Length: 239
Image (cartoon, rainbow, N blue to C red; front, side, top):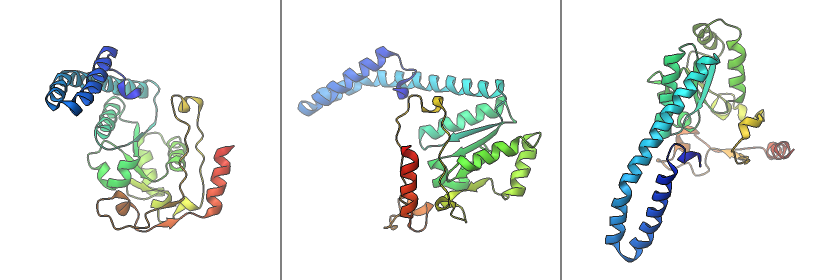
């Protein structure tokens, strides 16, 4: 799988063998199971080393492509954990090679942490909510100005002073239930992807009392989606 890219096949095979036998042995003899676990440790360490090198090289390739093709805007879907660290590294590499490129963050990490995503300046803008329409707006406006500074000034004038831009249900206008956007996927966008569509029947949570849950922080109340819109979305995505 793509998660294993960069790890030699012999190392993957050895790890699978050791983990499979580790589980089996641990059920009948814990000492042997622990010995197999210790034996697998060097393979795990080497696999992580190879994976980090692969990801670092991939980040360099992305930054080089952005520079070579003079890509004006790069959007990064930001997750948590190690994936967030790689997103930050890619943004840093792009900023070093092509400072004029606008780097936009979106995804789950933005929805949970909001403005904090922008504290270290790796990202120029962040989108909290659906990104299809606002990214199209960014691309259109970038063509109207000569440089990054002018673009950022234009966004401040037309949208507002904050670099965190709230869209859809996260905006004051609650646009999520006013329109439905079908992404214009290209053939290359769907390569090596599972064709699955997530249907949203409402936002927020009916319980809304769990202090540990990010949904409680993101949306203060539950808002059901109109049945007519759910029906229309099913029809649209089925054609």
